[in-house]
Length: 177
Length: 187
Image (cartoon, rainbow over the protein chains, first blue to last red):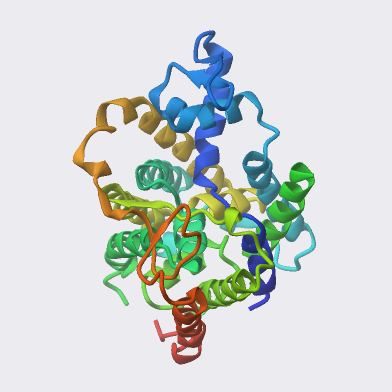
């Protein structure tokens, strides 16, 4: 129950979205290789994009891609740092095989890091693709959303757990047990 | 000022998620298999607790309702949630906890983020083709909440009742469930 106070403090100030920032990072990288992805103009946010997705909501994402030092992007970078700091000051270090897969994985699928990475890559793909289609992820929909009693939060949670629970049970309940 | 706030809150959120063990895929998968309810309790309590505080502060005007962001409800929310759930179960990560886990030194979380970046990128590319499809048909008028949050911007179920009357009991239910669930089920 240690995290509760922190969690409350965070959401009281500004609802947050992690999965959006994956799009922003994609946009930043894409913009490095493309001259006409983002253009400055007179739109409400000053930027627009040749990509329809970056261009939606009056170019809000396009503008964030151009100015990565914005609230949402820094928030997520700081979460990464937060994980690092928490690890530094924790007695429970993540060492050995735990760095590559959790025990529940290796007891069912063996200890090939490559196999785990292969699955995790597609899992990451599905998670972020799904989150973008839903317009938010666990933090934005489930936590910030349900906290505001938003219908979208309950719908999202229903959709996510409707697949996550059966998949987890089918995948990880080995026959031996 | 926003930037400093982002860094402080991001750090606290990252540390809090890690301390709650939400960045541990073992714990997430244990929860989804309905074997280990520790994390589910923490999350439910956190949602209830922060929700209660939010609506108490809102009713005393301590928080500006302009800060709230009720997202739109549409078909894609359910389907997207379903797609996310599959990846969530396989990996034991969601976008936020994956980032924290990578910072914590988990190598598979880095691969998760890479997969996520590609997934989000593919979505960016196809969005133009699906944006007019039925996936984006709204439910209940779009941005809809049970308790009234910001009547100028969002719809709600019970606009004539004080928001706290609706949100308060919901929050208390969220906070009570953790005390009714068992901690761990024998494997």
